Length: 153
Picture 1 (cartoon, rainbow, N blue to C red):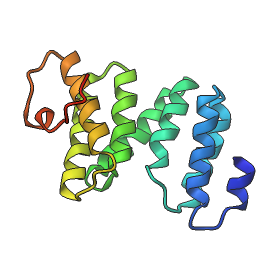
Picture 2: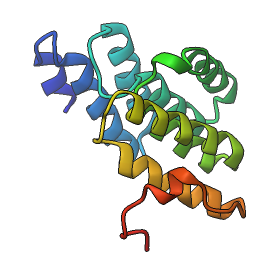
Picture 3: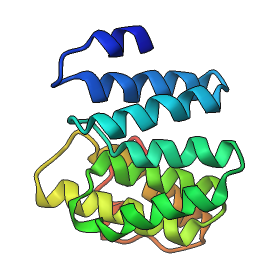
């Protein structure tokens, strides 16, 4: 994937590095993932999600909490411009860290972005994630939970 990313055209290169880094993460190679995520960020091209959230997860895997927190602070400051996919990944990271309230906040931000921009691609995923977090928090069903289709099981 890294070799393909290096050969990709400018409009796809950052996304290719993002995907390569994601593959390294799934393979348990956090340092190699960090390298590809940093390259995606440096490239600056379009990506499906903010590479900084992927980099955050990889840095946490390496025990580099301070740098990860700094990246999260940057993303949080840009709350109004993040993509729904970025919100989804951020909510997952916060769930992994045990911050269910923060995860719920970001899942909700993602749902609101989907609704505002009529983006159905991530809506069901975010609604399900949000619902599971709310259940874990012992919260009652709300209007967003009611938007889920009948496949909640």
